[in-house]
Image (cartoon, rainbow, N blue to C red; front, side, top):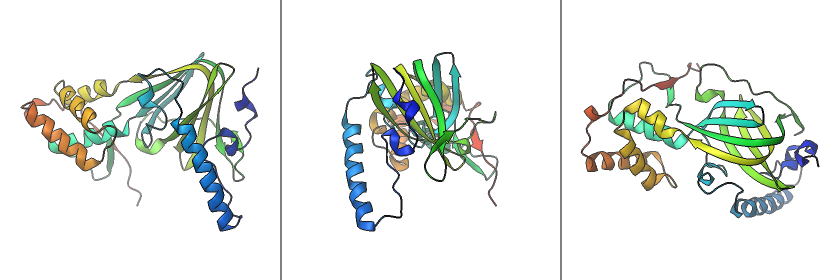
Length: 257
């Protein structure tokens, strides 16, 4: 039986956050938004069809993470992102250790990778929106130099049909909404954040990363992350000299003016 994703013609066919036209009365727009939001919240409250250990990386948990890779090989698809939480951790730790970019125009440290994988793919396509919200073919092409401006992760959600999983991912690439639509048997996540952080800061960062994750990962902001890093360093008796930052790098960008 063919995948329903193949018949999806417009963005509202995908079952995610709806796009409402602005040519309807304001009161009707508000009413529809409330209805659609309620449906979305109900969808988000349901169990997701991945193993428990992978669940923390799905259901839009990677929101605002920047896009590192998109690769299809045989019946497996890997979407690699640089986790925004790990990036904030690295920026704060880098600042505490006195690391300063060599140029003024920089943003984000990393990448600190999480790989989201689809297995035994039955159907897949990638689409962007035209001016009438129709889904049209789009090819994700990433430059060799990886930085946050090439794309970010917005939302992802699930549907299920015929004992298969339909995983819909909304990316923001070059000012456009792009959707990766995949019908597959299973999904997994590979957490390489600690590997990448250790490369950037040396082995002692693992203790601090574990402490900060436990304290703030579910509800974080810059100030809290910095506070927890300092608290952890004190608890473990770590000083800036205990970190090997030989391989630490910021991702640079060109100025926009």
